[in-house]
Length: 337
Image (cartoon, rainbow, N blue to C red; front, top):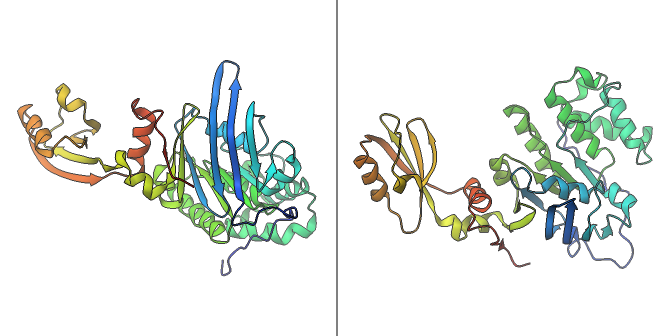
C-alpha cells in the first residue's frame, strides 16, 4: 500500500471544561475489585494509561488480564472501584465508552454466514454507520491485506486471516483507544510481523494502544510502559527501561553448553538453574554468586564445558521473577507519576 491508512478523528468529542489530551488519561482505573464467588479475581487494581501511549499488560494465565479488559470494555461489571475511558465512566457513560474503544478479544469469534465485507458493515452498523463508512472499510481491508478476501465467507479463512478480520472489526468505528488481547496468538511469524507494523502505525498516528500478550519479546519491542498482574494484584507498573534497570533486573544469566547432557545436578546448582535444554544450561547469576562457583561445581559433578557466555536480562526474566518468585510477590515496582 503506497499511502498510510490514517484513522479519522472519532465522532465522540470531549465535554466542555474537561481536561486537555495532555492532562487526561486514556484509561483511568482506581481501586478496582472483582469477585467470582469466592475467587478474588482483581484486588484493588489502580493504574493509568496515558493518552497516546503504547501500554503493555502482562501476566500468567489466571492473573486477571481478561477480567480487567472485559471491565474496561463494559462486558463485565466490577464490584468496587471506578474505570473511565477518556474521562467517561464505563458504567454510567457506557454508550460513549463503547464508541471510544476498539477491543480485539483473544478468542476467535465470527459469524460463519457472512463475507468479510458484510461482517465489517454489520459491525459499523452497531455504531450507526452506513455505506458512508465503506471507504474506511476499504482502507482497513487494504492495510490488513484482506482486500482479496473481502467477498470470501469467513468459514473459508485461515486462523490468521480471521485474526485480521477481528482487528478490522475493532477499528471499523474509528476508536481512539485500541485494546488488543493476544492479537498475534496462533499466527505465523510473517503475519505477526505485519500485524506489529500495522499496530505501530496506529500508535504513530496518535492512538492509545493497550496490548496483552504472552510473547514477551512482543511487549519488549512495542510497549513503552508495562503493568504486570499476578493473582489479581498489580505487582509492577513502570517504564520498560526502568523496569529492566531495577534491582531484580541487575542479575544476569550464565549460559553453559556441555559436551554431553548433565543429569542429577547437586542442590547448589539446581537452586540457580533457570532452564535446561539438552546440553545447554542457563543459570541465574545473583549478586553474591560468581561464574567460577558455578563452573567449578559443574566440573566437580563431572561435566565437560564446551562453551559459556553471560547475557543481560530481558523482560522475560523480570516477568518470571515477579510472577514465580514468592519473595517478589507483594513488592511493586512503580514509577511515580
